Amino acid sequence: MTKTLGRFERAMSVHSHLQPSSFSIPFHRAFRDTDVVHYHIIHDGYFGLNALPLLSRLKPTIWTWHDPWPMTGHCIYPLGCARWKVGCGHCPRLDLPFSMRRDRSSEEFRWKQRLVGKVKLDIVVASNHMRRMAEASPIARDKRVHVIPFGLDLEKFSPEGKDAARRRLGILPNRLVIGVRAFFSSPFKGFEFAVEALRGLGKLNVPITIVTTHDKGQLNEFIGTHQIVDLGWVNDDSVMLDAFKAADLFVMPSTAEAFGMMAIEAMACGKPVIVFDGTSLSEITCAPNIGLSVPMGSSTALRDAIRHLVEDKSERQSRGAAGRKLAEERYDDRQFAKRLAELYRFVTADSRARQ
Image (cartoon, rainbow, N blue to C red; front, side, top):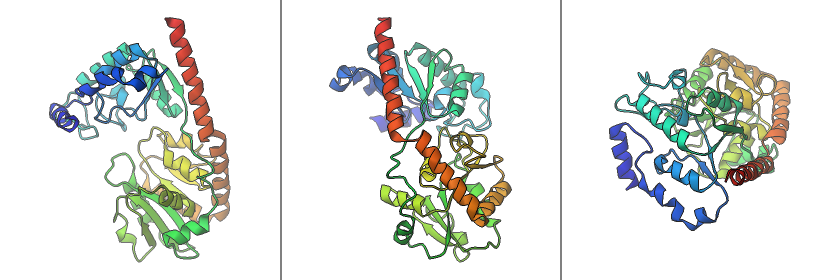
């Protein structure tokens, strides 16, 4: 039924309206027995958001906004568009996920505004970039917004084991390794800028290996110029971990990010990260002091940053070490769990005080 309703929603240019199973949640024992309910990624087509006002009246409610979709008329990320600040409508990018066949962005915006207005909830975001968006959003107005960065297992994500990871991935000896995510099908990951930057690198002072994940075959043009280790879609956490450990630097030219897990995973493994300005990534990586940020959409600046780190071993190492220290200070999963526990206690105590 969920898939059928999803197809109907797409035909109607609406999203997350019709799934009725969400209204059955109060009858589940887990819901009845809990003190607080924390929702994540409930706009992925399986949950009917119209149930939220009822659910929030029954239990203290927290909703983590993993992307700006709750603040827009339809898109997951608005890119350069600012119409989400004034109610959307006349959408210039109906093709962006979640796409619309016809422009109902203003109607969807008003629906979200009414819905969130009825819901008693606290909002969690993972970056100040997202907090600023929430503060500018008519939809999030008057809601409490908490910034809690995500965390990692820093014993697992660590600089140790680089040589062993390279052997397991078949990386040739004496190579400088560049990591990049080949997410060509996404309008938000900026992979096309990475390709342009790599094309312009020219002759370097060290042989290069490029380790790539996600979409296979996107760097075939560089076979013969560089060693390409094309891992494709990775479901094995140990292989993904090897990709981070094996790298000397990581390139993440996203044009939209609400946080950036791969950036903190790379930093935790002691790798310098190159990002674009204008998303959460420059904040998350503490650019320019730790991460290296370049102007949004400039493949030339991205190329120059890659070449600079390739040729400057000392800076690679110092930025990598600083990134590891930053991960220990800000992105430890134990610290993340502690912050969430504090929020849960606060929200439940506040709910009792209001009764």
